[in-house]
Image 1 (cartoon, helix red, strand yellow):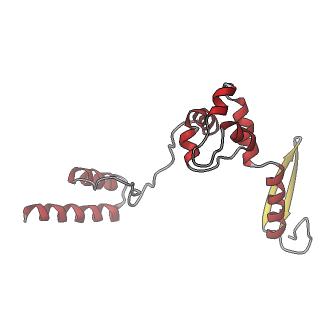
Image 2 (cartoon, one colour):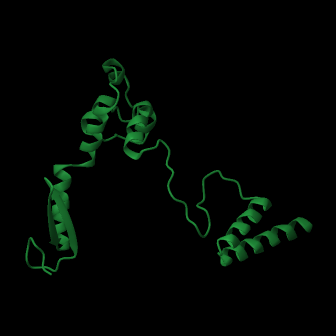
Length: 168
């Protein structure tokens, strides 16, 4: 199948556009899809969405919004509402009071509750202490229940090594 736009290259990207309850399918080559994506982003970007949603939250007192300014990049909350983008990482801390309701509305929660891997090691967390013997035994039992025998054997060997170290 050839690209619907250039009619030269094979179509590798398939889009479905719904405009005014009218469904259109587009079959595009990689280059035309990239151009279409850039055009759509210019037409309606994420920053526009965030800026629009910021307007729906409880009205912020004008003097309060004007007085809050990031000391790192000098962005004000009013500037954020106009642009829809934060200036730096410090802005998250400075505007926390105003961003929390906005992020909760977008994501449905104020804390990330994403998925964790079912098998293998748990992701390392900074400042987290090494698991103790009881935690390892619990993890081994969990691995056996989940029929993840390779992980259970690895944990068993780790437990034995710790117990041998304690004995000597």
